[in-house]
Length: 147
Image 1 (cartoon, rainbow, N blue to C red):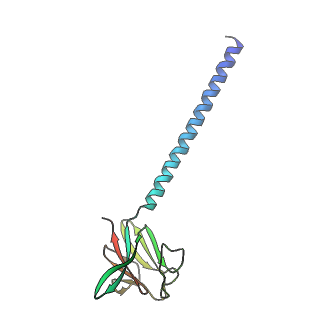
Image 2: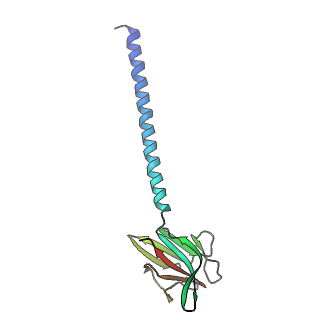
Image 3: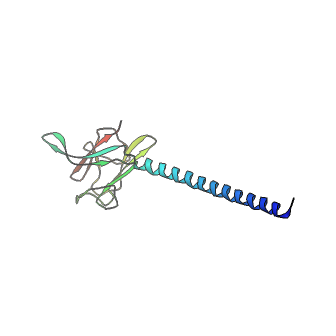
């Protein structure tokens, strides 16, 4: 074999290796992108709603928005909360609703005026079920879970 032919094969082999490396790099980046996108989509999934309600003649009626329920939903006066409660009786970070191991939990965040569940004050974390009513200050929210 001539020197030019060997040099041609070595250049060809180097080109193929470079294309293989770029292809593998593209595949890794694409796979990582897909996984990240799936994770973002799962965090955007709503599991139900907290519906703003008011008691009128002994019955609750929807008066405001339906707030999407996320795996971690915070309620309070602060703008950093998932659901902002515009009430002077609400603390900055008043309460939190968390999805853990397929179960919904409500916890008071050491608020000054406390959090109510079905018109009863809660002291520790408590399990939530569909239709429960969470009270913060003068506001009430009905839990509507997706089935």
